[in-house]
Length: 155
Image (cartoon, rainbow, N blue to C red; front, side, top):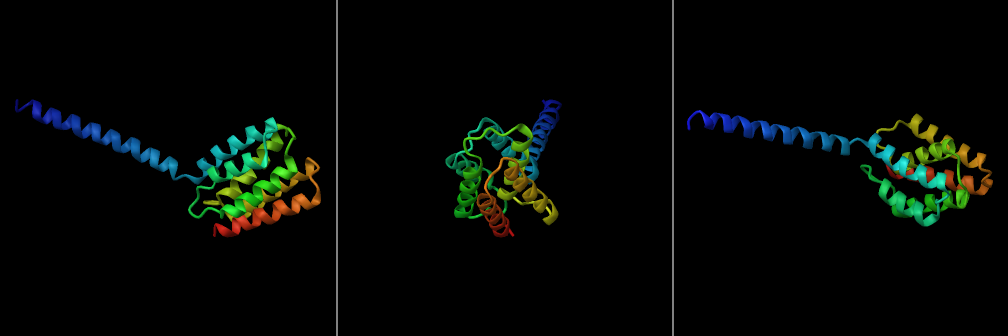
């Protein structure tokens, strides 16, 4: 009996250590804003490539993707969603366009860990895609203004 007690203790300690390591890894992954942005970008990329980028869909996506330390206000999320939807609704984007646009919007939804230069690069990419799909200047300006507001609210 005396020999089995240390063995049980060792097994319990090993099991606890494994649980802590697993939980720590999950917490680290959840706290990584880059991983969150990549997941959000991938979801949106698929919708843009299929032509499913309605205002309602984009509003729902922004609500889900805006999980940073200080997310943009709901009104700003909706303004950006509507502006983008007006520009790309009923259009199937090619994969490269969908990727650049979704990466930019994911950055606007969650700026955690991004430098000013990174954010500016994502914004430029977003606006270039809108120009490539021949979105009117007024819509590009609306997207630009909403993008800037979303970034400002996260500072």
